[in-house]
Every structure is written in structure tokens, then in C-alpha cells.
Image (cartoon, rainbow, N blue to C red; front, side):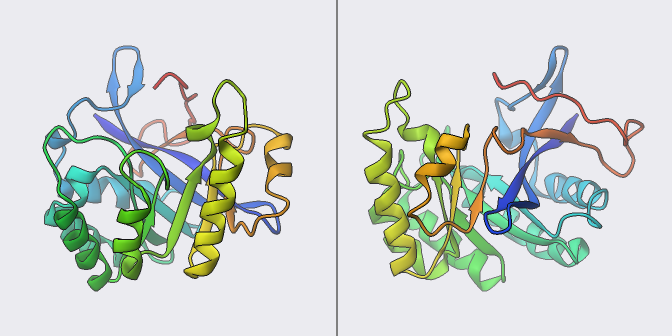
Length: 236
């Protein structure tokens, strides 16, 4: 069985939740874990789960984003399924996040580009997650810029043993890139008030992090536990 966990996304001014970033998780004996093989879950199954989940909080939040790893992102079935689903989600708006997660099969930059172009043509806004980290480097972001609406910077990717000397230059650089290219700028990995203070000189649109809200289990419309919120295991 699969379900979504959702981590709230916050506006900075005023500081209030506006939606969820959704993480697909699979039920095992010990709880909910990251699937080891996403290919077992076809695009249509995930799209249908999205509809059944979103209906439970549509009156409260108006924005959701769904993570796709590179292999899912370049699979046209996902774009087509989400395009046919997005009207069912209204008034909730849907965006897609291209994550930095490695895929078991080779995904080329040309495939990433063509997929981003396809999502854009289908009217689905795109977020590049973890900018400046792993494969989501400047060259890729510049290539995809015509199709991207938002950069997401993960503070956790540059926080080495709580030392911030690598984090701050990267934060400043990507904030400047977002302003120059007229993109929304989200900062994830907010773990303390000190992290918020680091953003005082940045133009930030949205925030995420454990200091603001942990991921929670999101029940579906047909869940017997529809009123239950299960704890999220950080290890997963």
C-alpha cells in the first residue's frame, strides 16, 4: 500500500502554511518507508492517489507539489497522468518538483530537457529541488530555465557538521540567480530560529523545514484512519 506524507510549505510574509510537498511512501511492517523501486507504482496509480488525498485538505490548503525522481520525470506517462488529473484537484494547484535523487537507469540531460518542455506545454509548473547540489547544478538549471517557475535551495545539503561557511555563499548565489531570472525562491531545511536569521538579507518566497513543520501522514478519502495523523520517522 502506498500513501503520501506531506510537509507543509510556508509563506515567509506572513509566516503561514499554504500547502504541502508530497512524498510517496510504502507501508511495511515497521511503518512507512521510501519505496526501493518506484517503477512498481505506475503513473496512473499515483495520480489517482493524488486525487483521493488532496480532497481531504482542499478546504485548508491551495497548493501542492509532488516529487518526481529523474526516471519518473522523463516518463511521459507521468506528465500525461498529472495533466489529466490537475483539473480534478481544483481549487488546489499542482506543481512538480524534479528531485536530485539518483535513478537506477541512465537519464540524459536531453531527456530532462524534453520532459521539462512537455510539462510546461501541459500547463504544469516546475520546481527544481536542491539547486546547486548533486546533478541539479547551474548548467542544468540554465538549460531548463524557460520551463521553471521556482528554485528550491536545501540548507541541509550544505550544512557540514553545523558549519555554515559552505552554506552561506551557496544561499546567496542561488538567491541572486532566482532574482535575476525572476523565479520564486524557496528555502528548505529550516531547523532553527538561527536559520531564519540567515535569510534576513535574502528575498525568499517560501520556507520548509522541521522547525516549521514535520512531514505527516495524509489520509485518503477512503481511509478508515482518515482523522489520524501518523508520526513521521526522520530515518525514512
